[in-house]
Amino acid sequence: MEINIKAIDRILAEGEYIEWVGKAEPFPLLHDGNKKRLYLRWISSVAVAVILSILYIASVLSRGVEIRVAAFVIILCVPAIVALKPIWDKRYLADNLVYVITNLRAIIYRDEKNQSSMSLDKLDGLWIHEKGGGVGDIAFGAAAVTAPAHKYFYYALSAKTRIIEEKEIVIAMAFYNIALVDRIRSLLETIGAKVIRVN
Image 1 (tube, helix red, strand yellow):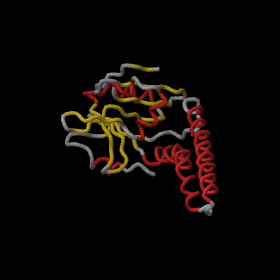
Image 2 (tube, helix red, strand yellow; image 1 turned 90 degrees about the vertical axis):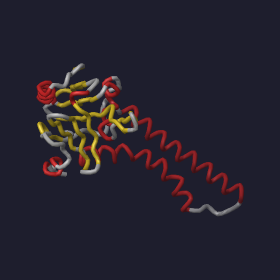
Image 3 (cartoon, one colour; image 1 turned 180 degrees about the vertical axis):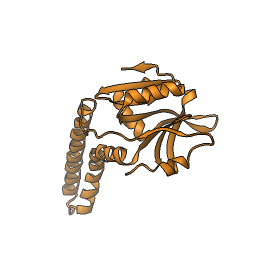
Image 4 (tube, helix red, strand yellow; image 1 turned 30 degrees about the vertical axis):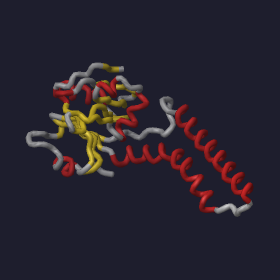
């Protein structure tokens, strides 16, 4: 998906303008930060599918009724969805999310009706997580800064929110696997955002 600057311009407030826009750099589904979790998820999904299948077959045989293919397929669908979700999430993040820094906010743009943003002058935490080769993640908000780095993938997909004074406020989000992270850190500092952790 190409970055549609005109569409992003339409969601900006008066006096707000784009300083930087980008997307996640290509990244492997399996990497050091998530290998164990994904392997565990896939093994668990297979185990659940096998156990549910055995229970269903045992139940059917004990009652002396026919095995229904439709019921069998439904039983296998839930573990399959759980197993495949990381693949869908990776594709969605790579294809659909656009990261934006304006003079006022950090924004994760999905479409004109679906964005997450945080005001740069009200940030209670900002962490640049460098991965090497000029690529890294940027965590916004104290809740993201104190979270383990593997969670940044999920904070990019879905920002963490809290209801404050009857309004849903974003308290944690992340730009995942972006290039030129040093330059973006300098830009954020120039705008006035305080970087509290760098690694």
